Image 1: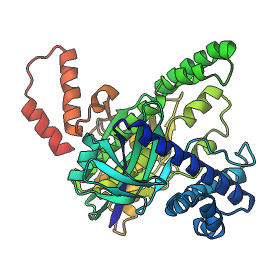
Image 2: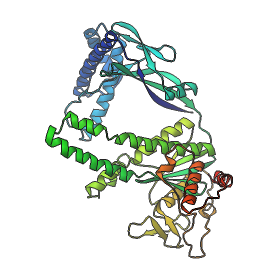
Image 3: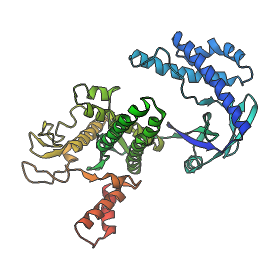
Image 4: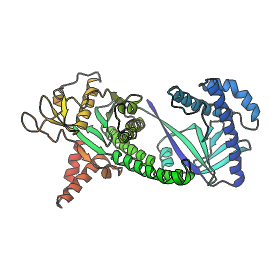
Length: 452
């Protein structure tokens, strides 16, 4: 049994001036409490919420007697979370200051400070009593409400002072039972693609992360050169121009759509997902020997771990098991002969030193992930040749369709379609390019449905 957690953000209706002023006052008092608690915790090296509350509750409570007492509890929780993160960075020598700075504040609420009032409003306890807040539900909110997700007791509130609104963070949880997997779906995450192996067929989902990262890199550099001379390094105009790039939103869109496609395919087939086990500082270890600044930046922005986290979160929602295997030499050894694969001139196509067959680098990694998971499930794993069908030329084996991935451009898989529909769309596009007009979709879709 696993528990999936999701946070939904909703906005309140525009509040009257007096009501919004009450929340501005509440935010100011809450900020002061958090700042005092953070300074005290860092000076005394306190990470525990319970210890911080035991030492400072009475003092803070006397300073703000007009507030409900549980705001001191939530402020201690907020402060302890900030202190843990700051002390960890300080230990790694990544903190730039002696004490953390409290810039952005979200008011933490527990079950004594807020209550749901139907489906479209909540009640919040303040220093001026209980206030009812109407919010604007959206499609994502109703989706969790109607699919059996349970609203937890904790919530957060943030102020939008420009529009006089509250940004409300609601948390939903759902207990999901994992099924016993009938097979494995292996995934290899790379800079410009994510490769998945489904029933012996490799699908390469192009992400074009390199173009995305370099495009934003040059645009950001141009903005910095332009605005730094005119308005200074920390100018507000430059920050506004940088926000319009929306790089983070596009990268999140890519990783969550990929995670959806992978997890839904695994759930449909009742398979487990196999991922490579990455270390704590994967990107830092990868760039140790890289001197090119541009390549170092690309590796840092490739989001290898970010895509894996998205897959993990979606898998938890569907009850799909996730298995991690050691990625050592998975792209360098032939899964049939267990012999080294030689790559020349930076090519992603290599040749087995024993059998002579050609392998795509990402495909061979997926096959080795699959075989490692198969051997590690406690069963007697059969020979790899039983799973890898060689339908190429005679000895030495030539490059075959079994070894080459089916490439899916970003413009196809990014449309929220299932894998068979996406593959069918790519076939139709190829036939249009070749000038063929007579198509029998039923036969093609049927064959793809059997494969995927």
